[in-house]
Image 1 (cartoon, rainbow, N blue to C red):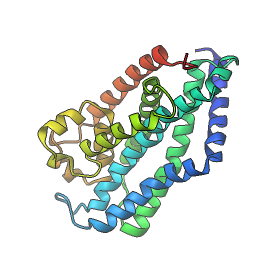
Image 2: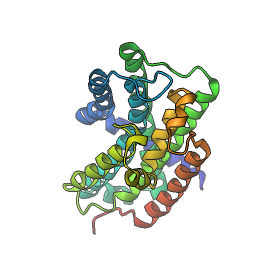
Image 3: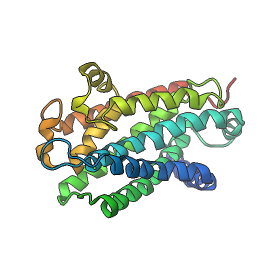
Amino acid sequence: MKPNTLKVGFLRGGLEIKQFLRQRESVVFTLLFPVVLLFIFGSVFKGEVGPSGVTFSQYFLAGMIASGLVNTGFQQLAIMIPIERDFGTLKRLRGTPISPVSYFMGKMIMVFAAMIVQITALLIFGVLFFGLNLPTSMNKWLEFTWLILLGSICSAILGIAFSAVPKSGRGASAVVSPIVIILQFFSGVFFVFSDLPSWMQQFAALFPLKWLTQGMRSVFLPDGFASQEVAGNWEVSRIAIVLIVWSVVGTLLALRSFKWSAE
């Protein structure tokens, strides 16, 4: 990769962050919506799920962090890029030195920055209002770090790739949002994954969100809870492999299908 590509990508990332912050409604919804859901579900469901005294709030926090990656990365980009394409923003960018790779980098930087703020808000809110226990092991925080990095990359690149599916920016939300909602229900975000029907578990296992939620559970839940997983353990290595494979597949699809204009 040419150094200029990296430089342009980082510059584009800074611009993407500035543009995102100017959209106040989008900022509030993207960053605070998971916190609102945690407050609602944490207030309604106060019982324990499984062994080791794990509360529903603790379980739900892990799912919301993973789901936040999908919402901020996949959903937002799959909707916003078609809108930018309709408005001619991408067509104008095509006349500049920016390459598709630099453009992708810019989007991923914006997603990562938004996720840092969102996760920080979730953790602070969870600790203050629901007494959530944070990891005490450095290994858990290291695992959390690579899950965030790899999850952000995977989610963002798949959002870019999927942005070629909606025919217009106006209909993008109607195409993308139902997919995300269905995967959230199937992947153990709102329910204990092992309690779901077997066919749902098998379907969810095809997609990254299921593995992201499982990875976050391995960070925030006691090791004893691993016995409640379908495989009886956290499968951390498999989580990394699945996310890497999806990232590679998403990159190939994005480079092949990305369009600067609707024509």
